[in-house]
Image (cartoon, rainbow, N blue to C red):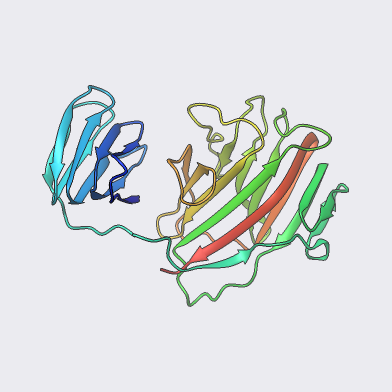
Length: 269
């Protein structure tokens, strides 16, 4: 879901998804996009012109309208159900941020270099316990922003794996990075005996990637860059309510991972 508000005289705003293009000027609107469901545009004030990617159909929405756009077929326009969209990031608490402190990391194998600014190595696994969270507080969203740099030795994309894993009681439940296999791309593995989730177009090379996990729905998405989030390039799902108590940074034999920064935060809003 996304919230958009454009004011002033800076011209129009264009928002594009695989199913639609929305163009506005001085308008307030919300969007919901999902690979499995129709994309929706909800106009709160002003006007928005919506064009379907599949057929090129165009409609103009005004305040109180919602348009639903499938991958194929006509645009459906109806009165909005009045749902609200978050107009700010919300109150997030940092779980992991700032400098890397070597003594906080448990090295299972390998010999990674750990400085305050960087964790880097080939064929290593470094674990970090996440701070205990109050089970009486219902966290709704977790954001994890991982900045990967170019390693001095070895490559991020190999036939092995390199990236970040999330654990629950010693069991790996989620992986982000270059997964095992010959495909050179960032990917998502939800560890439920289903194939690794790869983007429609490969996302290649060291970069900043943000994971968003919704505890309520189990939905997991990967976004190129940091916050604010762009359109997801990978989407998956975990069992609803899955929690994380430990993370791992690492790479398999022949692969390398250099992490320049890591910021994990959660929200109860």
